[in-house]
Length: 258
Image (tube, rainbow, N blue to C red):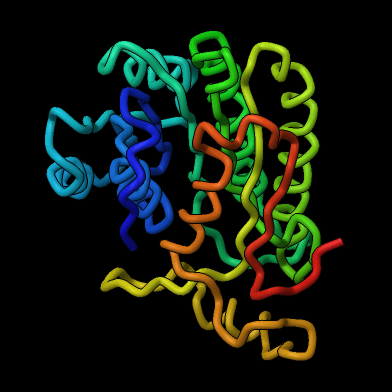
């Protein structure tokens, strides 16, 4: 992936989950567009430092640690992200913990809390970001959701509920902050082709079995790559995206989501 348009020069972007597959691709893409990129990480400091160096070093990016399960961490992360470059124009939140598909009757309290905390992290990040995001038509929030918000799979009821709730939340927030010149959108990928050396997600074989081969409802034979998900997020970020808000963009191999 390469982009040469520097239409985000002078802007600053916080990418939450910046060391993940999708987050890393988003960091690279926004840096290529000229933005100063704040790479959030939780447990991969070396990967965060390498990514900062890859996209241009301290003059083009910085890494910030935060454990979003901790009270107040979202506010601290946003404050640190804005303080570094002196402003914040874009928030992209990609973080959601990995999980194994589990029937509702078998869920533990810890598994329930896992998904609820993930949704709470998105909410807390938005609460912290809205007061400091640039307005005037340039403030951007993009939340990474999931196609399972619409299409159910066995063992994924709680995940689907969390993502469907995130869609309802982001639409309400979009209505509230639009007059301040801030847009709020979501990108909802299905399965993503990793295309890197990292190990597969948790319960990989279980996920493959659940997905099966439903090619009769999919236009494309292959899932999107992380770079393609980043390109979809890109749609909502630039100066030309000021009329797009409250939208969900699905990347599910062309499967129609209703």
